[in-house]
Length: 249
Image (cartoon, rainbow, N blue to C red; front, side, top):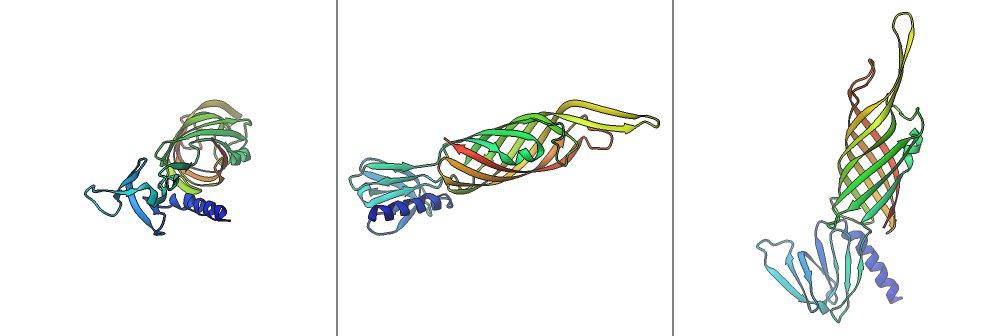
């Protein structure tokens, strides 16, 4: 029963540590925590600076007085009384994501994201293929292929539930299918051409387990399509929603 209670406490700390903007040192006997920064753990002591004080003064504690250290990016280190680190909990830093909602507009989209060591920045590369000439949704341009680069910022680091936002750029090839009357005849114009999008992505991610994540993302930005037909704009505002399933490894 004691092991179950201790595991539950660790689980709660793993979740809650990602919601704060500082690290915490949890004392073993006094049942309190210390808000800290620049924590350094050695075999016999733990050195840190106070989060609430400036000046860079370094404090130290014997490792035997500390039960665990919870970092702001969601990592937790458990420390036993003999000053030995016995466990480390963290979330996986690689994500392979399948964009489920893109199927609604006949696109197959996946992406790969790498979370940097700080836990607060992710670099994502999407890859999308349109498998129908009617996959534009509300737009005048049907996607055939695009890739790009997203920069995701996680203000609270990695945790069970987290928010992110950041800029993204897409570059791809689209299908422009339209027709018009020139006075006497109906003229069709079907062509494939380059397009680009500059977006700001906002998303919420939920990870029920360390290897699985669900996310909902809203993207707003502008699209540049030099081959837009006479009734549409070369540069226009765009928006998109995505619901995704990710495998973390």
